[in-house]
Structures are given as C-alpha cells and as structure tokens.
Image 1 (cartoon, rainbow, N blue to C red):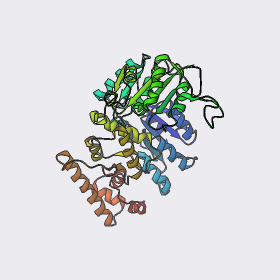
Image 2 (image 1 turned 90 degrees about the vertical axis):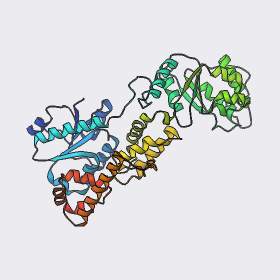
Image 3 (image 1 turned 45 degrees about the vertical axis):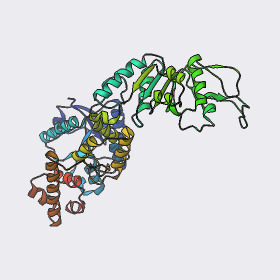
Image 4 (image 1 turned 180 degrees about the vertical axis):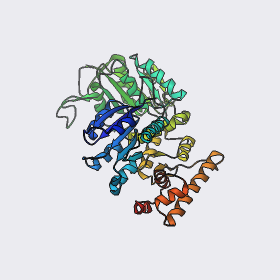
Length: 446
C-alpha cells in the first residue's frame, strides 16, 4: 500500500525535528499553500494529507473550498492548541479532518495517526476500471468487465456500431469510450439525440442546408453529420428518427456522402456512425416503425449495456464515484454513506439505472443533515424487517444516540461526557455528527 503523504504548509518554514521524526517513515511531498497542493494532486493521488496550520496566512474560506474539492485524501491537521478558540477554525477541522494533533507534538502518536489514516484510505477505495479502455465505466462486475472487453474489440474496427440498453444505463458513455479508443480519437465526437430535435428541423440539422434553401436561410450551414467528418457521430435514440429521414441516413451509410437541404452536389463525409436505442430495433422493424435495410446497415457490431440491477456489485462504487465527483455541491460535514444507506443502495432495483443513482446521490449529499447519508436521504428504505447484522446495527445506533443525548441534556461538559463514555473527545465529536445531534453544548464546552 502506498505510504505517500501530501504535507501542506502555510509558509516555507523549516520543519521542527520532532515533526521530521513523525513523518520519517512516509514518502512526503511538501506543498506551500492550496495552489501548490492542488497542482500536486493533479499530478498524482495522495491517500493521506497533513495540514500544517501554524501561521496559516491564506483565508480559511479558500482552504475550506480546496478541502471540499479534494475530499478523497484522509486529512490530519496539526496546529497550536489556542487555534481551537476560533469557531470557523474548529468547524473546518471538524468537517474535513479524520484527526488532529496539537503542539507539543508526540512524534510516535502522529506517526500512528498517519498510519491509521492510510488504513482508512485503503478501506475507502472502491473498485475502479483497471483496463485502459473505458476508464470512466466504473465497476468490476462480470457484466461491465465483458462490456469493456467488447469495447476494446469494437474500437479497433471502423464499421457502424449499434448499442442497445435501457434508458439511463450510460449508452453515450459507451459510445464515447469506443471513439476515444479508436483510430478516430483525435477527430470530433458529435452526439445527437434524434428524439430531441423537432421533426421539422431534423433534416436541416443533420444534413445542413445551402444559402436560400428556405425562407430565412441567408447563409449556408454545415450539418451535424458533416461536422463529424474525421471522427464519430453518435445517433442516440435512433429509433425516434422519422421514416422519411431514415432513407437519407441509409444513403450516407452506403455512399459516405450527403446532400444538404437545397443543394445539388454531394458532400463526402468520413465519419463513423455509432447508434443507440432503448428499444430493440428488430421489434421496431416488425412493427413497421424502422426501415429493415437501415437496421441491417447499422447492425454490424452490436453491444448491450447491462441494466444496473444486473450489476449490483457496482452500485456502491458508482455511488461513491458520484459522491466524490460532486464534492463541491454537498452539504458541509457530509462525509459518506452509512452502512444502512449502503444496504439500501444494494437492495434497490434501479428502474432508472445509473441516471437514477446519480440523481439520488447528488440530492442526498445536498440534503443530508448528519455526517453520513442515511436511507431516507436517498429516498430509499430497506425492504422487509431488519434482521441479524442489520438489527444489531440499528440497536447499536439507537443506544449511541440515547447515551449521547442523555449526557448532553444533563449539561455535562464534552470532557466529562467523553470520560464517562470511555471515548476520546474527537470520537465523541464524530458520534455527535453521525447522529445529527446539535452541537450547541459542544461549542459551550470548547
């Protein structure tokens, strides 16, 4: 496991000897300020970050924004004890750090903390695509692994591709992966939603028009198909294309030329066609809604994108990917998913597939009240009564909350409550945030 640590300081000062001793076992990258730290994170991933906040001169708001954007590293803070008297400072440490240390420094303890943070980072890593193909197709299920292999094979050819999959499964993402790993990667990728263009404009949008072709055409216009020359054109929901325009598309596939509206000369276009549909085009052909000859022209290389319910092992990695991708949107202090939320994610059937998951996770990250997203934040509930480990988790959480609330209601100080419950002050703060308990008593104690 990588033992790299990103050490961020507010100024280029010599590090004390005891701090050198604490980080001697780690590969440390030093950065002065958030700009240098952001540049370092663009170059490589650091599982752990150490914030040296003594003499920090940049606005705390900028540091807060940086930490919200870079939430994957496990952050540990080091500062003077009197800094905790400042409420915004306390809030920043609470929201972004897994632990903190104050001077005078105990090198051994800080070394253990950094090692523990590395362990937390390892536990938090989710499965990501290892193949060079389709890096953004997150997941490790057999269904998505097979799809990656097929993308590699399809990308190496230049024939038309037909992608089928339910709405929201990520058909455009697959089409982009095919383009990006093909010999046309340096050319344009032009996506077109055939069902979103008004019927009266489809022909002029796809094929372009010449000057004077119709009233208002004061100048000629290049169509979307022509603009994809040298690259790939993605025709999403091609089953919605009007029958009269399907003949024009068929001519383009056969001859690699188009005619602009109002034009008399053919225009050569070298573009690969990747089409997609949420309905099976063979069925549409039988119903008379899709041309049979166009279907056979498109149905050369076919891919099927699995529904999310068919790749349940990928649900949690996908949810975590969305959570981190939209870090700047989420509510202050929200750090991840509770165990019950993860169970609810796995149990849901996802009729809206990946698009539904993305919307639920983004909404939950904004609306959640505690440190961890709960099932109700996702607008999901666990099916059936809890049993076994679920019942034990639920009972433990209720007991934690009751114990904390009763101690706070009694007016005890944070130090006294931590001593009574046999936990550290930092652990107590985390438990309060986890259960969404108001921190008024905490602020008075500090």
